[in-house]
Image 1 (cartoon, rainbow over the protein chains, first blue to last red):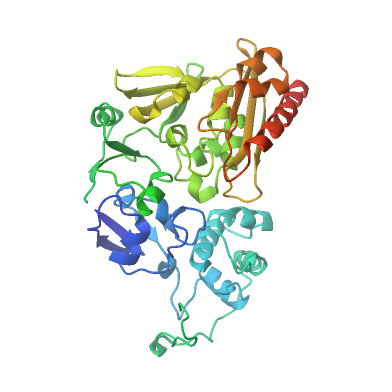
Image 2 (tube, each protein chain N blue to C red):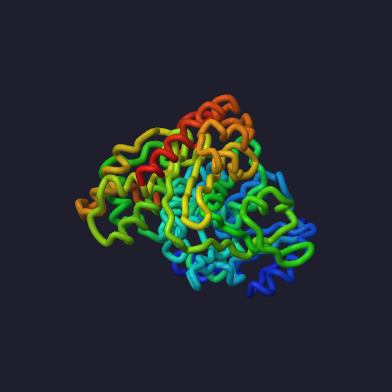
Length: 175
Length: 257
């Protein structure tokens, strides 16, 4: 089997019924799709399969053999975030960040499908299946609306990539 | 343990590989099977994957609408049949609907905490027939008969219903979040030729046709047709109270349609 992941063709050796989520995370080390509920109910594992958002935890890898997969890693880079990523950063649309990958993938697909400004109702419908347990929904929806209008600036205060991973500050924290 | 994956490239090959269905796990969209595999509840030894089997056609010919087994719930949600579309839009969310299939909805094993197979109600109301294969060969039967039979040994190939003018109404009830399963669903359709048809889903392991209500048109008779169950979404008692209410609303709307 093979997949084109974020533009790069990859041979896949996981067993055929492995969820796409675990192929991405465990075989390809692409960790933005999170393993949340793993039964389709939380949305954070959402990736684009041939441009359409799908739950990677519900998708047996054999059923998408040959497909083109886009994850958060394929949308932007630390130096050049995608419009939706920029809007999320500017408008504080992430608290713990666990739901953010799925939110941004679904929002990106919505804006691409509409090709321009979207209505609040459309955003709510597109993100309906995505849970944010910090309940930051208002800022998330606002960020998607702003991104769809192109109402975003330049992000220049991100940590540079050579700073590496942040230290674990709280003893016993899962971070 | 390695699973043998069978990937048929045509409906004929799917029928042949399925055989009598012994020891075969069928995967169409995967929305039911994959969580079971992930959680270790099942370990398929042979899996029949239908994504390339050519069963995804949704077409209308000779006055009959034919829905292939792997037509997605998302496709039904965008379809022209309002009764089906209303139900389809009520199931899960856009992304799950893009994977979930009509065949999977009809073959869903009983859920452990909630009731599955919501589409049974509108399909019963539409007078739909299921074409399936398995032990004893191909069979076409009313959807309510298919649901009442041994679904585990059958491979759904197609669902069909007559494209005739009909009045219809639906009522769907669940908890107020996107991924809630049903408390109770009701679909009613009326045609010149076949009269009133009433389907109920979300109240037990499979959807049920309510023949008593069809002849009496009395919503309270629904409890003579179905026996609701307790689960994590609602109690049987609550379902018994709500079903006649939902059915009365649907029948009222049908009258004024």
